[in-house]
Image (cartoon, rainbow, N blue to C red; front, side, top):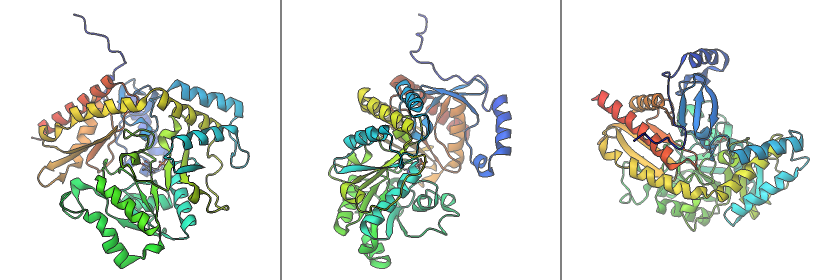
Length: 458
Ligand SMILES: Cc1ncc(COP(=O)(O)O)c(C=O)c1O
């Protein structure tokens, strides 16, 4: 029987990356951009175009896209209703407007839709352009509303790269280098990274030492609770390798915040709008309400930069003089595209597809923990997925070189996932509407890469 034609174009690598055209352009890249840009690059090609769930490089190789613009093209590349809305609004508005001065009507349509989708206590919106700015806006709003100064944040979190957001994280010392020296007011505490507990304990026998640390250490030795404006947290840490907190931890953090009057700032820049299987990741913990929620990335629908902070009535009306956003915040075309993206999430029942992709990920990937010695852990929540590689399972010795080799091998086979220099996990961020058969195909490519690297290392 003739093989069935696949319903979707599959990845196809004709020339081992980097091909000759990519190589020539990468040499120019190294000459033209600031040096740190190229130093940490792990993707061995230059992009020509994106369509649907595929990336195509300048040498004509096609790859499955499990990066999706770092979670910013949730509906795949070139999703027509979103791009069309952006183009129509660009022509209608004539291009750029400074909407904090002259309000364009698209702003109101988007704000209304966002508030309708938000948890019911979040009733107002502050416009922004990037996730970093939205986080910084949320910090300012929390401090303005409480009149307090310190903010508790977590080791391993990523909240952006500018002064405050970069200091509020960061995932590694190099992100905070050159920032931490200048920005004060953050108290860093351990996050429940249970596979590698910072206290060397095991959940649930630990009794959540990491959470108790806040009262037992921070409030005992560092600051009084009434000096703390709020707690900035990722509901699931993304850059740190999809760290999913135990339910009790999130409930305990919520209880602490309510006890001491701390604003809960739930950074949903990467997790928001369906990525983890719920519209908002915080919905995985019913009863946990938050005060501020920075959003960006998938809010764009995959078209133009846009970000926002959602907040409660009290916090968003506490200060009439605070200036947030900027010239480019909530461009009419970006608002129109974002609105079309939000409508598509519901219309196309994207959350149902995320549930199916999660089911497949669990079925295919969880057995890797016993099948491959190199796989230490697999963490999955919706389409927020990480595989952590170790050299020695018992000691959990990080395996950054093996992870890099697996990533390189996967790219050569036609799968682009997220692997950054010196880390030892690979993350997958498929489009939320990726067809399940393509997703399976991508997982098969990753598994082949793991098996080959493991065999060669043996
Ligand atoms: C949780 C989180 N917050 C904030 C940011 C910063 O967003 P942006 O890159 O749009 O400034 C990111 C980016 O990856 C993120 O993952």
